[in-house]
Amino acid sequence: MGRSSESVAGRDRQREARRHRRRALLRRVAEFQGIRQLQFDRYRQHVRRLYDGPAGAVLIIGSKLSLHEPLVGRLFRTGRFEIRDCRAILDIGSGAGQILGHLLRHAHPEAEIVGCDLSPQMLARARQRLRSRRPKLVAADMTRLPFPDGRFDCVTCGWAMEYLPDPTVGLREIARVLRPGGKLYLLATEDTFAGVMTSRTWHCRTFNRRELRQACESAGLPWRRELWLTRMHELLRMGGILVEACKEAAVGGAPIASETDPEAHAGGRVLPNV
Ligand SMILES: C[S@@+](CC[C@H](N)C(=O)[O-])C[C@H]1O[C@@H](n2cnc3c(N)ncnc32)[C@H](O)[C@@H]1O
Image 1 (cartoon, rainbow, N blue to C red):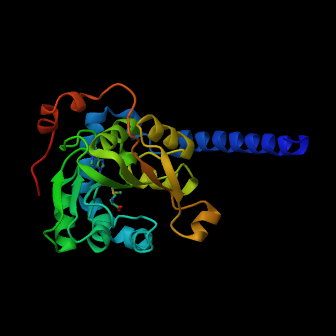
Image 2: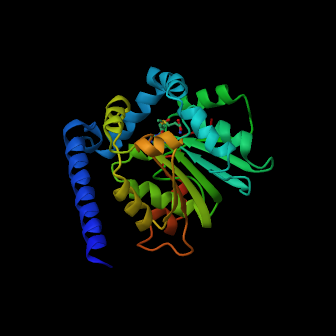
Image 3: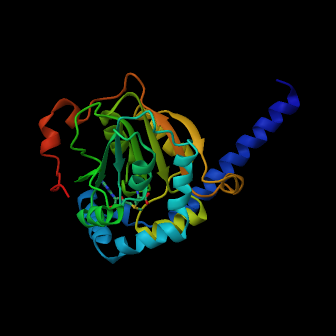
């Protein structure tokens, strides 16, 4: 490498490090802090109450007005989220069925579609909105999914991972329920100014792109592609972190409880089916 390309690379690294520090400061000052201050069990109850209540109903209108729902639909329609070859798909944090609706439209007609959410009321809203009995809806916590290992060939998770103080716990559960080679479409709030404001409204955290990438890697879900809602979102680097990750053949690290104890699924705080 020549001297000038070395100095360009050095400048890029310095710029990246400065951006990282600025964003860390933004998060410390302005991000919703409850997720770090409350114990996870209490925080989880808080999230369930939030979404069971009127905020959950507002989210339905919000995801249309912010264009998130139609723009995510475009990703499926144009094949950037490719699910046609999948026969068992799990949507985590289904909310009012925003992503489930796209799965119903674009998945193989015989594909099994399952949605899960912490909030039973959100699942009831999803059932009503989708007007379809096809997806199976399960009230469950993504840190203890009531499914056996390797059950799904695709997992979608839209704007729900930010409700975990440590995403690795949820990501390892996703890796567990995915078959080897199975894929994950993950959409998450980024640590930008807009993301931090979102965290305050929706009582969640944000992610630094590099940290989330590392968390996915350590869970055995390396990123294959980074995606953007539109070209404009890509140019302005907005709209959040959208990635396709793939489960490696062998997942490293110590096994989590439910991997070693099949009973843990059944007892894993699963709420009644909706
Ligand atoms: C912002 S909404 C996302 C809804 C939808 N996926 C979308 O793309 O618009 C977040 C959803 O994640 C759910 N959620 C939060 N923590 C969860 C957890 N630990 N396990 C399962 N779902 C969770 C909430 O109840 C809520 O319905």
